[in-house]
Amino acid sequence: MQHIRIEYTENIISRTIQGAWQEMSFVVRVDNLSYQKHVAIHWCGEEGEWHIDEASYRCTLPDGTELWYACIRRPLTSEHSLPGNIRYSVSYECAGRTFWDNNHGLDYKVDADAGVIVYRDVPIQHLFYDPVLQGGKVSLSVDSAVRSSLHAKSVRIHWSTDKWKTSHVTRCFKRPNHWDLVRGSVARNPNRYGWEIWTGRLPIHHSYRVEYAIESETDHGVVWDNCHGANYQSRRSTLRVLTLNLHCYQENDQEYKFKQIAQAIQDFQIDLVCLQEVAENWNDGNGDWASNAARRINAFLPFPYHLHTDYSHLGFDRFREGVAILSRHEFSTTDSGYVSDSQDIYDIHARRVVMAQVHIPYFGPVNLFSAHLSWPEDGFYPQFDRTRQWADERHDENVAATLICGDFNIKAGSGAYCHIVNSSEYEDQYLKTVNRPAFDQVYCDRVQDIEGAIGHDGRIDYIFLKKGSRVQSINGLELFTDHSYGRVSDHTGYYVEFELT
Image (cartoon, rainbow, N blue to C red):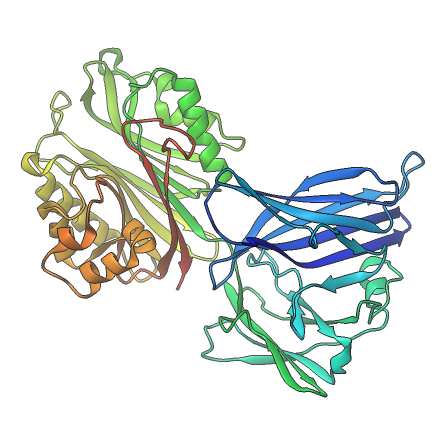
């Protein structure tokens, strides 16, 4: 079975006053067989030397397949000529197996300065779709390849920035000198492979997202590229949240542990991190900032985050144990306070929660609470209710979202978990992203057997979102497992990604 397919390829030689270079771009579709995967381009130019270049993940399509992208740029120098005409194939390594698309062993061939060739059997193809709108961008360029044999009379983009409450139509243009204008290339439009490029620009201003579809009127009727009926969507950066219990310095190799956590924060570009069992040396109750676990993780980040932390009690008879928030964005306000009956630092059930308000670009203010609550029989219920009341008092119409995250010491589906469900205020976002049928039964249908609906979940760590917040979760992952960054604690981490509604 073919699990990898080349969608389209671009081969362009640019000539400017800065010099000449050849740029080869590849878009590949793969079946999502596993989270861990490796996609590569195998190619050679006219000199006959084979090269391997990695592709990177671009987006997931509505049918669940993924687009991967590679751009290879080679300058003309006194030592190296340009690759010229190229041969290539693509490989996909996943779950111990390797899949190929190599044109049935013959390799694919694309001439130098040929423009774009589309391998899909479609009349029109949106090129180099990017689901991310870069911050500050106020317009979006949309390029489409249309089969020359259709004799397209017009190409138009239908688009909306408010989920189709209102919509707009923008004309595209086919310019014979398209490649010269945009890349300093002599590639023809249309090209020898039977494809012509039409381009349009959408004035999106500072909108968070834009959705669009491409329509062409041809001699053979109207044809569309609407991303398999789902429309294309580009949006600003999402809000990415992680919660993790650090287990108070109980692992053997702490430096490796902190580096792995920092690497995950960097790889996933996480905006907000909630940490529990954040330890630092007791030092007669005075603490020791140099040993603070959140500070040490922060030190391994290439660009340190903003850090807010406070301790609750003596942990493991040798640490000030507390909770922390790391934020990629500056804090607007911070706070901390006990939510437990006890405030005795020698009492393990003295529980403090830290809170921060962070202004997230394009989202607005987000209130975040990092909590480590007691077991149900030791104070969970009043501790959660006080945290919820505190969060509700801080939530107003200007706040985009309120999140309560952390180690709640309650099992998913248990009576204590039902207490949160029955409050009708906060919803389990990891469950929503990884088991939507169970989430709908619990939070929408309000089934009586919550434990039966959720099944053998096993979590005690959660990311809860206040209902009515102006964000929605779109992706969730369990991190710091044997197969994802390795174990760094007796807990795993939970990551959830949000977009604006």
